[in-house]
View 1 (cartoon, one colour):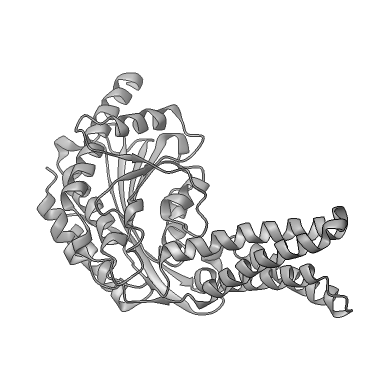
View 2: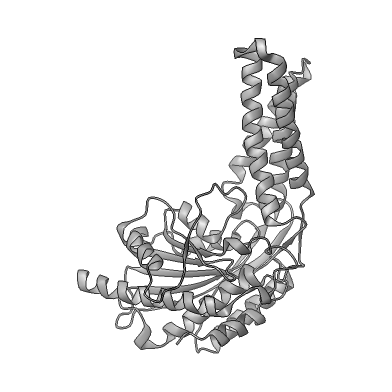
Length: 387
């Protein structure tokens, strides 16, 4: 049975600052582990080290060096140092790009410790099977000097302004030379937007002031409630292993899921469904990704047309720069499934205003009920189809 009061209690329990790699995150991990042990479970622990370079330093270097390149090319500086400086910057950017393709392996800068916590429940009448469902949330939180919406807008502004500046450089120097002055003014105005965005990115810093109730005590509470529900053997799925995963250091470059991936990289991605719970307050938005299987499409329709009458909103189709999650990482690894978020609560996350009073536990209860009911029906269909 899914209980709103139990969800509310868990949200309150995890509503405290718990920045990645700090004793506060360790306390959140210990609290989650204790709650699982109180359910007579023996959770697995995966400890790992990570560097803050990828999440907190790399973007500042990349965007500032990118601006310097745009600035020099736009002004068409004629000096012998220009090609040398340009080549050095391009070489550094390429080197950083290659290095950061596996950020979990980086040991540059400050190195910290974190851990993942996970439980696997087997099907009702089997020891294991090839199909898997992953219920994911993250244990850590973070505060930032500027809000996540401002950060995303700054990154978007930087990218789009850079594109316009590059086009203006090409047109004024090689194609429409007769309109040089007009194109120069357009490029200069756009370059001004780019430098403003660069300053915002450089100005932003991470702190440990957010209580992280929405992001992501709400997700923790959902996953804990689903574990409690599936602990009952009669509620257990028959065609799936159920994994319940609490990642660490999600707010520092999704380091937890990157390390946890070693446990699931050999899974059949067409027989695995992910449910990532990240940032849920009062509204429920569902992200399904692109190029999904017919099974995921079927589940998606079941979500939107759920029998409980819960309003689940479609993901607004926008390009999201600078905002990543555990679900986003797994989808890039060709896993399929769903991300549960609340786009309307983004103004609170990573701020001191991310507090438990912003969350409606009854909505989380309804979401969990929709998921369990849909999966029960889907599980029966799978069993009838393949058994």
